[in-house]
Amino acid sequence: MNTPLEPHDTYLRTYTEPEATALLRELHERGKPFGVQWGSAAVSGATIDGRLLVDFGDTSVATLLNLLALFREGLRTP
Image (cartoon, rainbow, N blue to C red; front, side, top):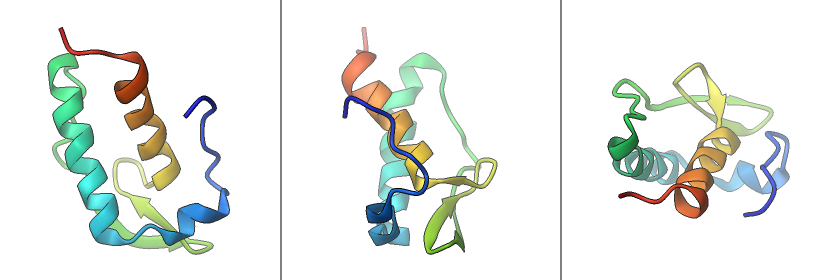
């Protein structure tokens, strides 16, 4: 991913709660070496305009995917 996802990207509506939960687990694992952790983060079950929200400030799945992209592409564990 070269450009950040926008919260209104239509394909984000296809993410299910189990998929978003798996992405959160990956974020926790990739973020550990850098001190990036949200122990209380969870899929909230709420949606806005069909987009699932992740509960660390009621952010969208787009934000979760953008954070993961930073870890996957830019930050490497030592």
